[in-house]
Image (cartoon, rainbow, N blue to C red; front, side):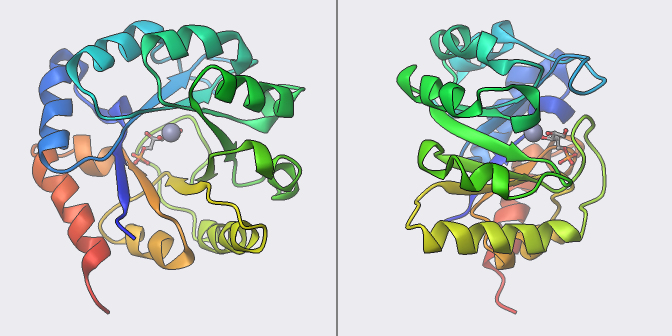
Length: 221
Ligand code: DX5
Ligand code: ZN
């Protein structure tokens, strides 16, 4: 399994966003993760469709859009048109989750479901056939730079077991506190896709930082 590394532009220097993203891609970033926050589902407010369009214009790398917003279904059509490839929603943010996951696929994107640290797997089990990606939050969403919650590893393992048991090929992504140290914990628990904000864009060399994360995955222990 080749790990999929998805640097999060939440931690990027937005004044030089293009440069930062290009450096991460030179380092081997597989996806670019875009954290959309609305000031309601989480306290902060970040980016919307214009940033997705801007990123789309500078790279063909898949854009992995994580919606920490209330009623994310309102943005499905616009974000698909802007060039989003993965559209991940939180079950607490909307009522008709299954309908919206289906609509995300119909709009031509991959449908993701995110599980907060306190959200049980049962939310996922009910809609597993409708998801292309499961996002296990290893921090409570809203901020970059938080520490990886150790309980995330057992949750990742339980999601992996569920995917295997149900013959589901969805990607298993982990988001929050991923560093050269914690990426191993998530990898060994069964994650295949790794979001990293601070550990990539919080450094002065995003290219080397992505390479370091990939090397950390490859180290034999
Ligand atoms: C947190 C976001 C994350 C964030 C991760 O709410 O969903 O994607 O960018 O940042 P780090 O890697 O710094 O924990
Ligand atoms: Zn995220």
